[in-house]
Length: 364
Ligand SMILES: NC(=O)C1=CN([C@@H]2O[C@H](COP(=O)(O)OP(=O)(O)OC[C@H]3O[C@@H](n4cnc5c(N)ncnc54)[C@H](O)[C@@H]3O)[C@@H](O)[C@H]2O)C=CC1
Ligand SMILES: CC(C)CC(=O)C(=O)O
Ligand SMILES: [Mg+2]
Image 1 (cartoon, rainbow, N blue to C red):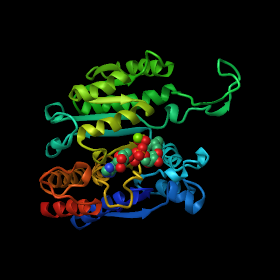
Image 2: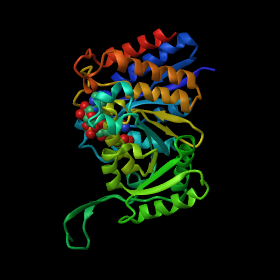
Image 3: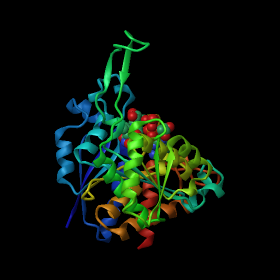
Image 4: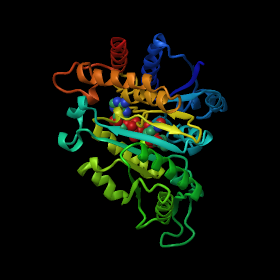
């Protein structure tokens, strides 16, 4: 069977980093990986060419493919567009269209990269945590939302804006099951992160996660407020095994967790639906400040491709080969600026991709 991958590079550094992941997957073809790629427009580039950030044909291609490899969307020069036309709506829209409610964001500190973390080595050495983020609900999708003139309250008559934080029971239950099952396969600990002391939505989240937890007596469940969690991730990140949280908190905490690993350019992700169909993307954005300069670290995207092989296709051997190639480049190869240290050769995005391909070749 040929694996059909829809490639959606998007904006900013998206094309540069997805090209490296495709290069790495292509390199595995000579070792028997049967894979083909079809590219589609998404985000700001799609808006410029087609007038909308998420064209129908892009969603159709995703649905007709076995998995999606995604770069990033976002273009500051389009920030004045009405919200529905902005590039970011494309990633939200495709997650919703494909029902990709379960987002896995593993934060691992590679031994070879312990020198790049902003924290002391003893705090992060050996770190291996998984953030399970709910991806199709919460304040990113809740309605009503908008702008209006305030009709009451102390600011009556002024302009105001509002969003709605909202979760249905089904949405919380299904992500809780995913997280408990992930914890069962890992260290058996699940920390649910919320703001139940203030927000009704997240008290409900806590109640439902607790209920679901009764079906997983082999998993040790704890709860933590998100502000404390943000602090604990820096103080003692190794206390965590799996963290499960909502869309907004998961977005923020995973960017924070990326810096434990050395760089946001290191953190991959998998966004899955109930049938393990997945979209795979780095957790970072389109990084306009470094776009087109061959500066971006492609490892998060390459590692996302490894997650694709593991999660959607069950091709563990190929996934491990990519991860080992990444580790070997971190140990002895050149590095992009975000993880560069004295004594290391400095390279660019394409150079890092080439180095990973070379490391793969040495394995066989
Ligand atoms: N999934 C997506 O498509 C996402 C899109 N965005 C969008 O991306 C645009 C830029 O957003 P920012 O807040 O600047 O976040 P960002 O994640 O794009 O960049 C934050 C910082 O990290 C650096 N960085 C990011 N990826 C890197 C990599 N692979 N290697 C080295 N350095 C890297 C950037 O240079 C920048 O200094 C915005 O339009 C935003 O809405 C943001 C997050 C996710
Ligand atoms: C554009 C955002 C909705 C995406 C984001 O920041 C993320 O998924 O991490
Ligand atoms: Mg984010």
